[in-house]
Image (cartoon, rainbow, N blue to C red; front, side, top):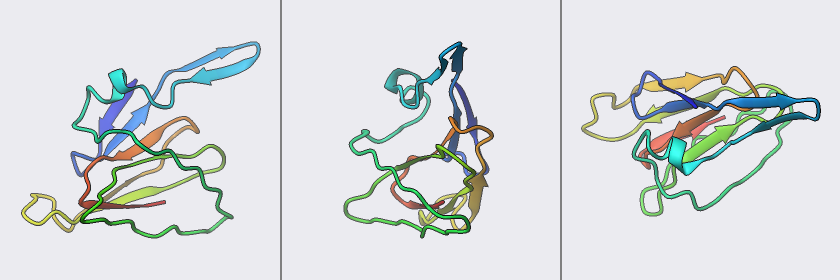
Length: 119
């Protein structure tokens, strides 16, 4: 598992190892031991899957009371994941960072509840 911190240090890019064979490939898209040991990640409680037509902008997501971290992965096509640091007092407050995962199996993680993610 290759993990890269982006411009906002808490925003991470996970690039898991891909295992290829004659049948196709296998990849661990989430493994707590590998990913959870890297950063202070929230408990993983929900997994969603959405499909968007070309050119779609999904909105910024921001919660105060029932905050959610985000793990964004693109199964097909391309995605650009961006985050805005909305944590008052943070050294990177108001700044944004983004990533375009290089492969369909890479994931961008926005672990803190006070950052907004869009894809």
